Length: 206
Image (cartoon, rainbow, N blue to C red; front, side, top):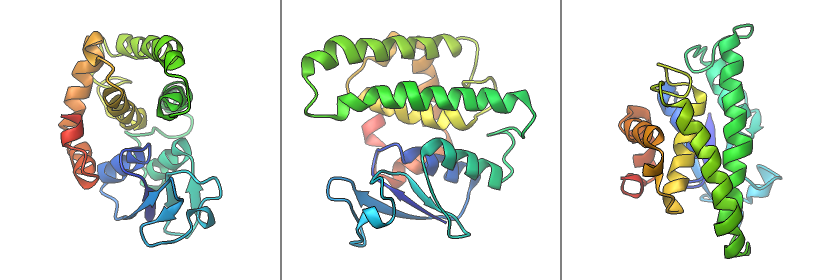
């Protein structure tokens, strides 16, 4: 199995899940600006969409899109705590939150990474919308250790990475006490510590 990633990007999410499951995996970095892998390959030949993450499975299938890769990893490893089986309502709660984070938070952060996006729009429209959505997550965590209760599931890995982005863009996460507590707890999780160390990000989120 092989994961194509970019340091600090959303490809950190499947890395966390791979480490959580202790799966053997090769990692190769991608320069998204120049669309070249660290071995010098044209990244468009690997993923015509030009984005990470990309997972090459043990059966030599190429998978893209975070939500799909995460489901594949959990199902392949029969990791029913990360993603309950088909027919169990808990599975659909996991997928519900996974899709919320993908479409609302991940997509919401997108304009902040775009240097051509007007700063005034970022400050007055994009950031307030993101803050409302993070407030919604904060409320979910008021009585929960993790997003869906007492157990770490797929959306927790995704939300952790979104919180690293919030810190990168200097959002004051102490505005959301439950979310802030949650983030501090997750930073100590073994799979997350390992993933941050592998990408040289420990200091960036401390």
